[in-house]
Image (tube, rainbow, N blue to C red; front, top):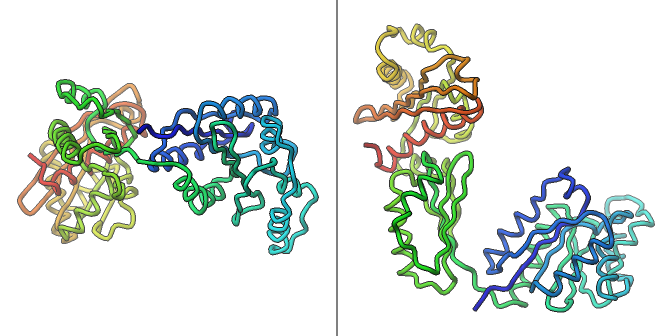
Length: 408
């Protein structure tokens, strides 16, 4: 059984001109895919009536479901209802209950409703009203040709509440849905090309779709299985891919379970192992602390640009290489703060190198544990913010690997 085809249609000049990022389309796509739809297109159209009419006609013949956001306001540039009426020869009609709801919205806030708000209570003939308890603009739904259309306001909070409270349930009743099963393997310290290289010789089942997505903090390897895929085959494939990628993996998100990010994995491990941490940052410039803000296990954190002053404060001689210096600092901080773990970050390179995107720096991370020191070393390049973020991620990854028993 193939999944029903869905499209997402965003309306408004502010969307197509880039004044507003279309977060609605991204949010809706995730929810519809989770339900079992196949997303065919995202389309954005400005406030031009004929463009809207033409697109609606096209979608009505090629999609099973379309959700449109925006264009339901009271002003002259809100053309959605008019476009639907024109596209499908469905004259606009006043919905008296919708009008009462709009009037009540204003009365409840001790405001006088402007006459132009009456426009929001007119829907194409044959449309089903979708109540909006979070704003003035009701939505509506209508079947035209192949497609069931749903029209909702573009305000994200209104759209999301209407979808979650009403539209989702209607979709489950209207369509036979079987969601595909997406496994997202998340890793740090490895790029997309290296991940692809690790999997090049592995023969994935033909029914599995493989894709990658890179973000500033992680790289995701996505395995999409058909809804009717055998569970044992899925488990075997996922385990084999995890083994091939190896230590860079910090978590594998599975269908029906909460998604976890890098920090939430570290937080869970620190709580499970009942450990506490002291932290000294240099290259990451306080970003590690910011990423871990609010975590009870982070008992002490500091950022130092001048290690010389810190060495003087700790009564340590400035001798040895950076690893030896970082290890000595870690020992002193452990005595001072009485934490189970101490993470110290140092970097080689001056301020000019750090700020110049054409030059690289070398960072050294030292983690003092009950069994001694574990460490890593990395070369970072690029703009200053990328160096800062990667410095934070590389230091935290040393902690993560230790907690997951992956340090060598």
